[in-house]
Amino acid sequence: MSLFKRATEVIEAKFSKLINAAEDPNDTLDLSYEKMLAGLQETRRHLADVVTEQKVLEQQMAAAQAEITRHDGDARMALQANREDLARDALTQKQAATDKLASLTEAHNNITAQVQKLVEYERKFQDRIDAFRTQKEVLKSQYSSAQAQVKVNESLSGLSQKLGGVGENVRRAKDKTEQMQARAQAIDTLADSGALDDGDDRSSAERELEKLRAGSAVDAELARLKGEIKK
Image 1: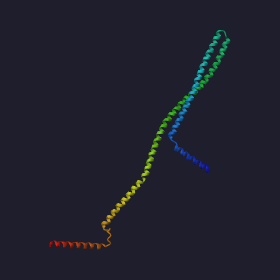
Image 2 (image 1 turned 45 degrees about the vertical axis):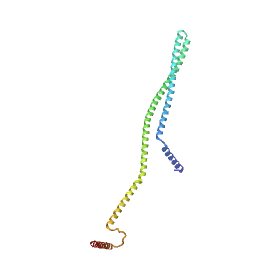
Image 3 (image 1 turned 90 degrees about the horizontal axis):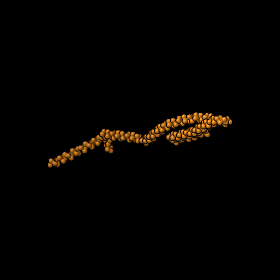
Image 4 (image 1 turned 180 degrees about the vertical axis):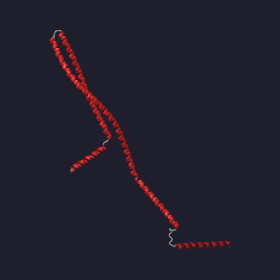
C-alpha cells in the first residue's frame, strides 16, 4: 500500500468519524420523512396531471360521440330528401369521427390503466410513509432514552472518578488510626511493666533503696511530731 493511499484512508476514516459524531439520528429521521413526503406530493401532482388528461380525453370522446350521432342524423335526413350525395358526405364525416373516437378510446384506456397504477402506487406510498412515521417516532424515543441513559452513566462515571480518591483516603485514615491505637496500647503496656522510665539513669536497686530511705525519713519525722505533742 502506497503512503499516499494510506494517508487518504486515514483522512477518510477520521472524516467519517467526525460526520458520525456530528450526526443527530433524530434530524436524519426527520429529513428522511420530509423527503418521503416530498416524494408523495410529487406522485400526487403527477397523478393529478394524468387524471386531468384522462378527463380531457373523456370530454373529447363525448364530443366525438356527439359528432357521430349528428352525422348519422344528417345522413338519414339527406336520404329522406333524396340527396344521396349529402348523405354520403355525412357518412364520410361520421366515419372520420368514428375513427377519432376509436383513437381517443384507446388513449383513454391506456391512461386509465396508468391512473390505476398511480393510484395504487400513491396508496402504497402513503402506507409506507405512515409506517415509517410510526417507526421514526419509536426510534426517536428510543434514541432519546438511550441518550439520557448515557448522560446519566457518564455523570455517574465522572462521580465515581471524583470519589475514587475518597475511598483511598478513608482507608489510609483507618490504617493510621489503627496504628495509633496499637501504639497507645503498647505504651500503656510498657508503662505498666516499668519498662518506661522518667529519665532516671539509676539502677532499680538504687531506686528501691532511695524509696526505703525516704520512707525511714518520713517515719522519723512522724515519731518526732508525736513526741512533741505528748510533751
